[in-house]
Length: 239
Ligand SMILES: Nc1cc(-c2ccc3ccn(Cc4ccccn4)c3c2)[nH]n1
Image (cartoon, rainbow, N blue to C red):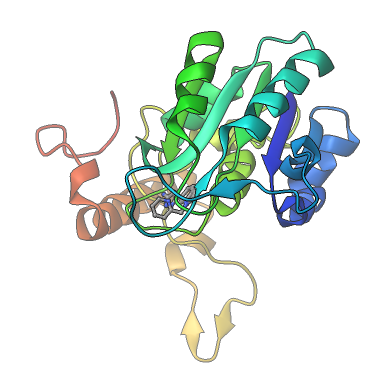
């Protein structure tokens, strides 16, 4: 998968060279390209924003640099591209969307700042490419970069060859058809600050352990995310 990240703060994406995503890049599973939007400005101050038509607070990102940036995206690779635009007004990002994006050959992330990107850029790109506006959640960030870090991590970990044991993806919270939250996890030592690991986990009885974990997951989901538990089914499994 090719990733193109366009931003006026390209250094935001340095952390993607670390850990799992960094390993995926090194392994050639991901081709990561970070671009500074200012390379497509032509004035002395590399201006990317201007005042909003109709008045109002804040500034809006000018369309011209973005237009030239997307022209360059097309020139750099013939891969069909999907444009992902983080915005508070977008489709809520969830595991289902992460799986959808993981199917694409190339994702181009357009990171806005200020009050957002001139709407004509979204309209223009929507006519030429698949474009998805995505919200990370019901809160407001100062720009799209933090959202892109989260989306890239969630998507890349789903790519074949990235996670050592792909079967573990099937048991995670929010995996397709698996809507229970994670059960609690424990490791050595068996007692820590007078807190012992639940005896069942040391029993070696795998059926009993699986049942205990399912009960803890259901209990936790009912407490924290009742919206994920189908009362008629009761177990949060199944479509
Ligand atoms: N889930 C999300 C996504 C964002 C987000 C994404 C991109 C941009 C580009 C600019 N801003 C600031 C801003 C503030 C106020 C209204 C509009 N935009 C962004 C915020 N915030 N929360």
